[in-house]
Length: 231
Ligand code: CA
Image (cartoon, rainbow, N blue to C red; front, side):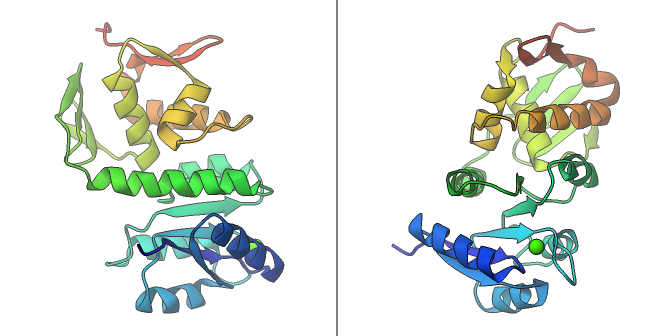
């Protein structure tokens, strides 16, 4: 069985080497690059299963590299885990709709990194599985075959996580889920202090769903639910 190849873009050599070492210890193959140029050169010869991409890089930054990845045929579907230096950047990044599959904030533990990598790789596997039936509640329609949500017949431009969050809540409409539970279900991990990620995505989803956002209810002190009893 061939091992899964993870590419790492990180300009600080000591961190880069540590990450390579840690991922290899977790059973992956890993290669490190100091900048986007090196990364793209490598991607031309060998495709990676996932990319761990630092945002703060001396020349071209991670967000710009990610944009290029997402617009390059052949590599645009590779899952990308963005590395940020500040948790305050997450709102901004999510708002930009950067195309990242997930975000991790420095400093992070190797256990956390490994869990996130596993989660984004699982996502790819899930997408290769056959599509499910359409889901229609109120004026919101989810078409899993197209991976698209519609409101009143018009497609809504959702990020991957927003889509998955909405789909999950609709599939389980009427049920209340805690932020921890949603993190576990949608992001595939469960770490203290990361529940704000859920709030950020719910907020963004509400904006995009406009009038239909009334379905997404905050249950004080507990979490969220999709309510289908709304007129
Ligand atoms: Ca850096």
